[in-house]
Length: 307
Ligand code: RRO
Image (cartoon, rainbow, N blue to C red; front, side, top):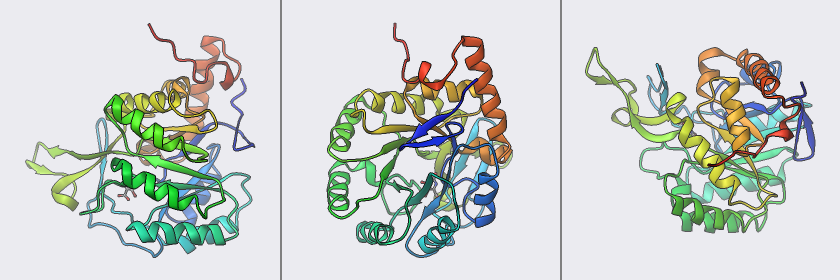
């Protein structure tokens, strides 16, 4: 069974990665992912300066997934640029976000001026910053920001999107994204501002934002698959799709690929299981492919059937 793939011209052992935010804040965590069976690794979304994030508890695993309002805790852009400079992976993914419009531009200018040669994932979808709407829910702002970014940014760039729920929104966002030389879009970030209640205490389970937070895991798989499929069928073929959301099993990985994902990221399940999840998922994906008679990812990638 051949799970190998290529992305941005680089061969990868398999299509699996961590989702930014999970197990990727420190050098130690990043090195643990690098030593796992993951095909590639992405670092925690970095801001220009380090942030402590929101008060705890701010991440809770539930029976069907997770809720988080981390609030962008990270060690600062320099830390992650320094980390990647010490590494030899052929394909490195650096996630970045600004706390405001100007900081987005400043952070990307800093990456442009650095020695970083990997792919930058521009996070347009953090749901957990009080008072700051998710950029990618504002179509005009997204277009303005990407227009300004591509005036100076020459390195490979992908964007991390929030989930959309309306076909008209898929159309509008795809029309905007198709105007830019993006390497990929990553769908989806967590489903913003859900609420989980502890039945024993009648209280919310996380402290920030009165309990509102981003939902991940099993809850979100149909939404994630819909977003992957919707963008796969609307974006120009040069823009690849990274599928994220609701991946617990090899069958889930298979479904993301079937919808058109080129790579598949794992967040909530990585948090629950640790980096060993990648060995399990690759073995399970191989078993699904074997059972269906597929020899390589290209045999079925994007080939979802309709009725
Ligand atoms: O740190 C967070 O609160 C966070 C981020 Br930046 C994100 O993009 N998605 C998420 O669920 N949490």
